Length: 326
Ligand SMILES: C[S@@+](CC[C@H](N)C(=O)[O-])C[C@H]1O[C@@H](n2cnc3c(N)ncnc32)[C@H](O)[C@@H]1O
Image 1 (cartoon, rainbow, N blue to C red):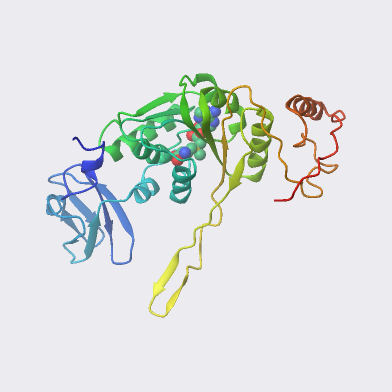
Image 2 (cartoon, rainbow, N blue to C red; image 1 turned 45 degrees about the vertical axis):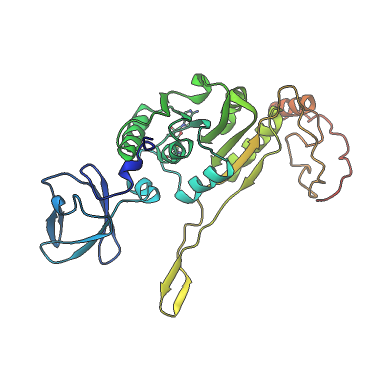
């Protein structure tokens, strides 16, 4: 059986064309592509690439200045953080959450927009594998070019599951029977119609947004749409640790904010989302709230939104149903 695309470049002795990540004695990383006859130069001397070709990963090479460098292949999180960027990339902690919580499976049909630098595309392609589909949409040609180079450099050539389209998702999406739609963009609410049409019943939409205002707008648009389940939202924070003798403690610095994740499932056609039974917190739908309330039917919600947009009185909402706090 042939190996999945890119797998032969992930193991075995170093080969020409492999990415190599060097670590210097201070823990700094340097990444380059192995080429016969080339030299790697540092400010403390050089060494020939040929010394690494055929050597096992985890080899230590010494420069002409006798400085040791540890050589390993970069892991995917290392690769995406060091590759050339157009747009900001999704951090590995969030990419991991997306793969797990959006339930990306081998053979899945996934639509993704925007592509940016191709970081998430690379994770998604590894997860769907050669028999899946990743249809990626990016509105900027220059970003699409950067992403294509990054993805193909990682896999050592084109990936059979990848289809990259330049253009806005909302104007270009052609795939049907899609299992997952992943949106990393400024305005995911603009893409809900096409996402809903493309998704199979039970399919999942996952939005990655940077601000609470984007999150709120996306949540309300998902509720208003009427074809999605009640959305779930969360964020993650990762704290790395300092490990030195008795000083074993969290590092003083951390990345405090990257983005929020939102997921929701596609309902079967013609099904109205069930009413949420949870009693809203006092004030959640108070005087200053100018959108629809959970108790309103889809028609009432649409009317309430239209009234709010016109700046006129919002349709009177029925008294909230009393329910059990969960
Ligand atoms: C933050 S970047 C995506 C980064 C990417 N997920 C990664 O990991 O490298 C957002 C991208 O979405 C693109 N974009 C925004 N709205 C879009 C739309 N409606 N359709 C397609 N691409 C869009 C932007 O041009 C930008 O490149």
